[in-house]
Length: 154
Image (cartoon, rainbow, N blue to C red; front, side, top):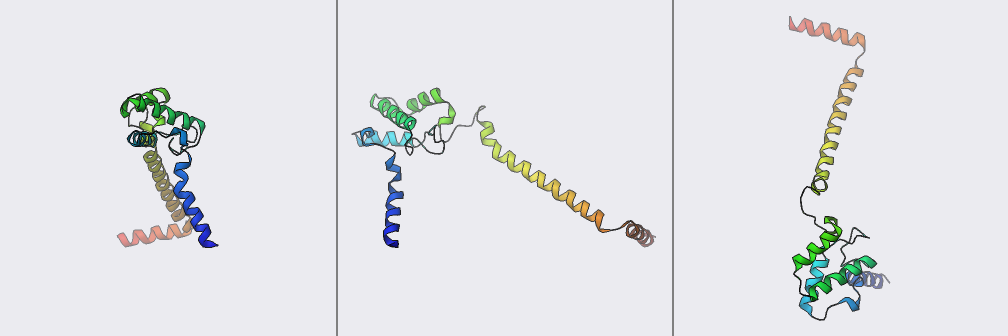
């Protein structure tokens, strides 16, 4: 039973990528289909947002896949197809958006969050250490320590 379950899961996970693409969408020319798949793998599904349009079965992803294939058949270059889609939907449609003025915060925010977290932890532990040092000694012990310190320095 376990072997059957493992086999079914393996087949499922190996074929999930092909489930999004419908047979009517596939181009007859393998070279053109390879171009379409290559472009589709780099475009984000605007509905799912964590998948490419090649992997998504959302209706908008299907429309974008068909748009890409129609533009390939009409003779447009890959760069022209991508630039047309970016002009329509913005840089967000790219799975790897370029670094520019609009996306610089997107690229820098992980580093800024880590830096802010590191600074916050440093300040927290520094305050905690100084507060702990202050609470360990009573006033009488602090005075005695000060007297001993003065006696050693003389």
